[in-house]
Each structure stands twice: as C-alpha cells, then as structure tokens.
Length: 493
Image (cartoon, rainbow, N blue to C red; front, side, top):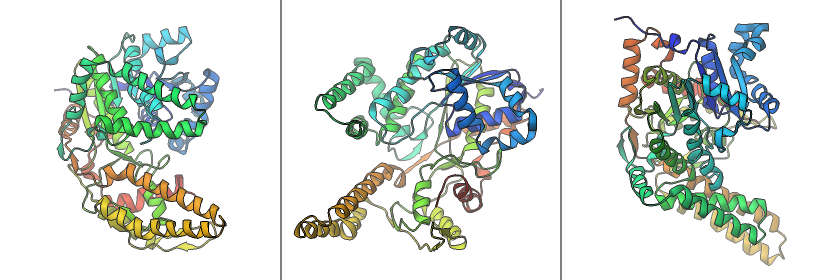
C-alpha cells in the first residue's frame, strides 16, 4: 500500500485559526509555515476594530515573537513577503454572529476557500468573569459551528478543549463525554441552558449596576458568580465548566460536520520545536515554580503522590495536525486526550525534586543581585492540614495585628490591610488550584495512541509530527528545558 503524506495533505490548504494570539495557536501557525510553506492561506481571527488593527496585532503579538525566529532566519529578507502571501489577519470575534467579520467580500472568500478550522479561541482563567467565559468558551462554539456550515470546502473542524472537562473524576478517565456532561445534555433537553444562563447573568449585572457597583466590584462579583455557577453544576471552576458546556453545544449542533476534539492536559513549553523551552506566560504550575525560586513559596497544598499530567505544546500541535489529516472529511466526532499521565506519568514530588535541584545548582538572582537560597517545600496533602498550617502561621498573627492596630488608633492600618489582602489572594489561589494539585485521575489516551499508530503506519512523514509522551525524559525536560525557558521568556527580577 502506498503511504500517504501529512505534508501533502496540508499543501495548498486554506486554514482558519481562531484564538490566534493564544499560546497553542501561535505554535500551530509557526509549525505549518515552517514545515509546509506551500500551504495556501492561513486566516487568523483576531479581536480588533478593523483590518489594520488586526494586522498590527498579528505582527506585534504573533509574528514578532521569538517563536518565529527559526522561520525568520530560514526566509531571511524574504520573511515579510512570505508571510504576507500566506497569512491574513481578520478582524473578528467568536462571540459574534458570523465570527464578527463585517467585510462581506472577505466573508464570502473565507467561506468559499476554508478547508480546515482550528478553534482555539478561549479564555483560560480559572476564575474568569462568568459572562465573558460563557460568551467565549460556551456560546462562541455555536458561532464557529454556524460559520463552519457555510464553508463549502470544509474538511475538518478541530476544537481545542481541555482534559479537565472531566471535573473531579477519579481513576482512569476515558476519552468520552464525562457523566456530568451527559447529565447536562439530558437536562438541557428539558430547559434551554443558553437562555437560562443569559437571564441569570443579565439579572446579576442589572442588580450590580442598580446599586452603583464600580467596574472593579462588578468584575470581582462576576468572577465569584462564575465559580458559584460552576459548582452548582458540578465543576470546580468557571474555566472547565464553560469549556465542558462548549463541548455539549458542539456535539448538539455539529450535524454532519467532520469534528475532532483535542483535550490537552496542562500545556507546557516546547519540547523540541521550533526550539526547546519556548513559552508564553505562566502555565498553571509555572506560577508555583516562580514563587518558589524567589523564596516566596515555602509551603504548598499538593499531594506528593499525585500524578501531574502535563504535555509540551509542540506535541499538542503535532497531535492536532495528525488528527486533521487522519480524520478529514469524516462526519463522526472523535475525542483525543493529549497528555502524559497514562503512558509516562510524573508525580508532584518528582517535579519538586527537579525544581529544587535546578535552583540549588543555579539560584535565582533577585533585583538587588542577591542569590536566593531555596529549601524543600512543605507539602500538605489535604485542605484540612493546609488550613491548620495557615491558621497557625498567618491567620492568628493577622488577628494579633488587627488587635494591635485598634489599640494604637489605626496606626498599623495600612500594614493590616495589605497583609489581609495578600492572605485572601493566597487562599483564593489555593482554592482554584486545589482540584489539580490533589487530582486523582489518570487520562486514558487510547484514541491518541491509535492516532499515532495510524499516522506512523499510513503516513510517510508521521515522524515530523511526533506526540508520543514516552519519549520525554522528565528530569532533563524540567531541569534543562522548561525552567530555562521560563527564566528566559517569562520570569522577571
């Protein structure tokens, strides 16, 4: 049997990417342009008032990143010309009908030419404002599906979700719809979830405005409201709840569209491509690493025996491209977990050991030029023990400061308010991350392994798109790639 080619599949293809300034989308765009320069066109949907603004965002927030260094070096003086031929910035927004694209001719062109849609638009804040998270993560998919149905040549709609739509399930978690989502689907047959939640949101916003709440208060309240609604339906935070509901709406509205859902776990810095260690912003565990190396984090709510599932971003992108080629033009819906916990697990205590060894050997230098000495972090495997520690070490002293402040005529008011605010932020941070630091699930990736097998057996160039987590040496990756990438691209003195 003659082998097929993923690169050949991508040749002369027109691709629409939503959420184009996101971490994963940028790595996807760079990979396509680097390995298949004969791609026909990549449309990047960007929130902007017009095409000029969208183009400026594309150059400043995407193409201007160091991520594109290898591609820029490859094309040299012709880089800008190459990009102008292959990439087009489109002003729009997934929260609007027709993806917010107002230019009729451009819309017609996109609908006539687009063969692949990568929907990676999302707000990934765990405690995003509920109204914003719903509009982007949940209802935005309806606008993407509606647009996809207008695309005459469409071969694939690939939706990027998250493995944590599973909520707080334990044990082996299959690549299917979690029971909570199945329950929601059954319930939404009886009531209109979209209409209900829009009414609930509008009511809450009206109440806040009626009492003259400031924008800061509205934002804070809507963040808390998102957590409240998520927990009402059985999810730990706004992000995973609204992403789960996005999957529900995708499944109900897709009809005969060829759909793939990629569910990555915690996405980390590049493993190899275009070079090791590139990262944008703090990714879940990175804020913990940053606080620890600067001597600001000495204890942590985390079960040392918990398997922490993470996967490098370039491997996720390779799985996306492989899934596009293998599943093109198939009207079914396929779900892939892309992670490491099933085939190459790493526990939190091992991660901590690698981080400790890295910063012992190569300490962080603070803004005054002093080396920061790190010690072993104290871990608490239950919320009860962590709260007891916080009570003894921080909350009781805070009460003492409160008493002294009152006795001294509010002399220590600023110190008390600042201390109290920081303590509240820490506890909120802990509550948000608790489900992942104490997670008891392992993500089955049978579908993903089958995808890798099919690709390697049927496609001559499958090795260019490797996403097998077994090849990762976690000690080397964390100590010599990921942390170095963090220090270079994200962390500041």
